[in-house]
Image 1 (tube, rainbow, N blue to C red):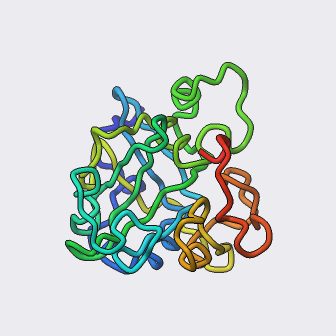
Image 2 (tube, rainbow, N blue to C red):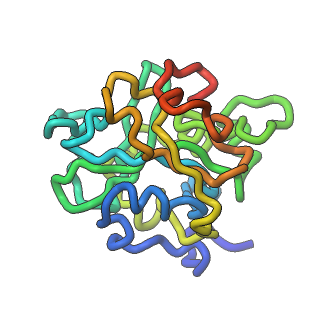
Length: 227
């Protein structure tokens, strides 16, 4: 058995330079990568199948819209390659990979993943007593964090090694990638329709069937199942 803490080429973290690009570029390139969390000595791995880009100050859907800075979102302004973890609706954590340069305020929300390793521990984290269907474990940003055991304590950590990192994995080919409007950002005006949600087309672990419906439908109110 391979120790979780021993360097293994296929789990080697992506370099900081990977993240120090525009959020929409990183969001596409994250599809197929492996999100890894070492939890109580066990390695939990998800293949990322859905992401959303948030562009910082010019993006009304972003927590950094207009340059807004608070204690809650301060890690969003770190250099690309850090984690930004926030709490939403009083019940869910959401994990983002910060992108760009320091103070850019841009990031990629990790919306959904397909289990690669540690699915049984993920099932326990999610409280599933029966065999999960595709998407039950990590088919939504809140589910993803719960499955991996990711909470606010990981806000601001570097995504470059234990306990939390993103590895090369199995990158999605450009022809596999679907794009459309982001989910649940109706408040963002025209920014709600920007095609900044990306997914591995046809993958059953995405948070909502793809395509999500007619243009603009992704800005509808979220249901509990989306998280």
